[in-house]
Length: 421
Ligand SMILES: [Mg+2]
Image (cartoon, rainbow, N blue to C red; front, side):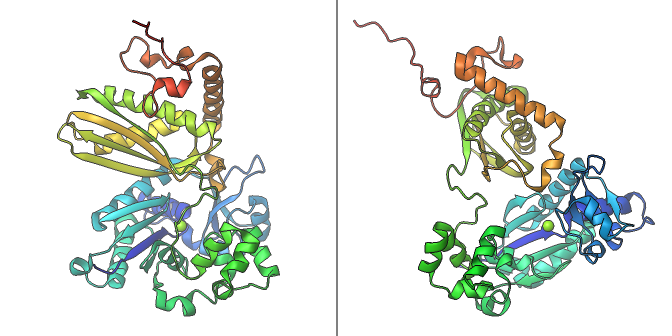
């Protein structure tokens, strides 16, 4: 068995770099935003705008991501504030992931600007994993015009910690033997999964560095932090126990698939099935008061060939229309026109909060859709699933909600009982 090798590839100040790269592409003599005190920030007029990304020189003014723009301006009056461009980010993210897929056998997108690449077994092909990571980093810059950090290790946790070391444009390793020297001296705040309230409590317990956590008795941590204590103890020791973002391990994915009675060769019809699946998935997510940050689509064709693609969302959502739109994009990417036998949608990266820093993009449209979804849910709860359905399903043979549990189980309404004979 070859030694596992994992890369964590993280775009440096993604939103700002992407904007800078676009400006340079459009006008090669334009000033490079990355070299100026500049930030990407939400609307200043409403006075709610915050810093979404910052340049290195903005950082020198001690401007932080998530800080209100007003306070950032106070620190640096000549600060250049660029409005966010959702479409650009989605595009850059897609091209970034596509490039990784050209080289890595397995790519798992983790967020809009981060991905894990499983490079296990590629040494024969590419040589030393560290030298190849340098090559890949430079390749991304030459091809796409932005820099990344790459963390190299044997598991995802350590690779992710490594990519967060000194930035920008660097490759770092963090193999288990390097943990005491490279990871243990860092403050507890730097450990993955340690939030502000946890770090405060860790300090009051006299635990200031990651090494302090690692050397602490796991039972002590469990006593103070329950299950979370055990998780951070494992992380501090470099053990990759399930790298998940949701605290409640509750329902880690919502998915559905259907086997179609006749093979489907019409793309529009296939999308109808996708929509009917998204309807039931969306309803389940909303009834759990959850949000999902990842969508994947799988199709099985008539020769039992399976195709599957997944993508991370910029903003976690529980809106049927958003899930459906993403599912359609994925479907278009993977479907080669062969007759489809089975089609499935699944979602993941479950959280119980809508968003942290990206909610500036949840436009009016999104709010309207969320309200519409809530209204549809309450109508269906009161009057049944069929009380309301999308126009495209009227006079259609397709079920407007499908997959997973049978209609009876979903609705709790049993069909007519056959007469006794
Ligand atoms: Mg990043």
